[in-house]
Length: 309
Ligand SMILES: Cc1ncc(COP(=O)(O)O)c(C=O)c1O
Image (tube, rainbow, N blue to C red; front, side):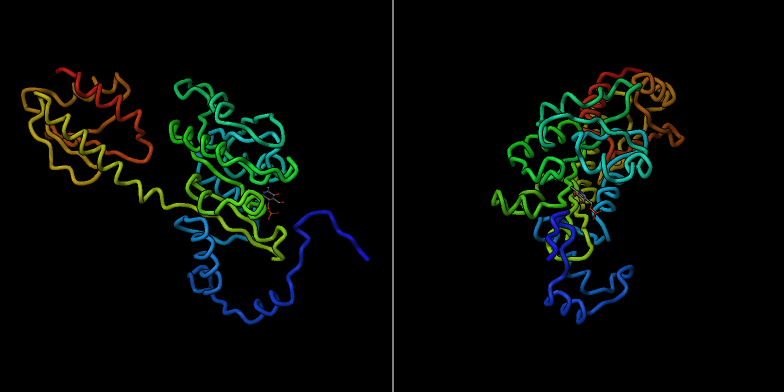
């Protein structure tokens, strides 16, 4: 008799699972023509109340992909000193994403919102890497299968929103956390930008992970439109602005009165750290976007309302 307690990754498919695998309909998943993969992705996305899921062979790949899409090269992520993404993914964080890790050294792989706050590099101090992502692991592998309290996860989520940070859950064993704490999967979906889950840990599947995400970058475009409208209003109140094209989405085109110079306007704003481009004929263009944050918007409206020519 062999008693294998190495890992929950050693589990093998049951007879029923093998029968299902033998009989299931397959196709080319690149063309979204694999009905079984499509069904799995839809099912898991729905469980977590997230918009999309993508099937990958491994949890390392889902974590690495999440880090890549949530950061830019040179950025820094915050995670536990014991995190899988830092210790066991072959240095992929630095190789794949060009990102460094700020490690939090607390018991069992946990930390709280205050720890995260203390780990964020000052955004205006350009010598330090930009902090852009927080990764948590639930359950914590090196922490001995420990489960996070929802309250802690949710406080960190709020902090991430306030500081423009993305929030990733390495949920390789989220199934165990959910069973232990009785937490509905959809509650995790509400907090995180991306979630990685593994089918190969204790569930009998030989391989497989899914990366879940919300189509935030489409759903959030309304915010850009709203900001553009507010900029339109401020521009209309300025004595040197002749005309603002009706703003419908995120592009604002306006014209400076011919008695004033658009060049001077651009230079004055540039000195305050604002970049914009001219379009000729004293016309200028502003475009709101994903990286134009609430803080930027507040500061820009203030600068705009005070500028004189
Ligand atoms: C917490 C955690 N995340 C990610 C992974 C990576 O999963 P995989 O082995 O499928 O790459 C593991 C693997 O054990 C894990 O324990």
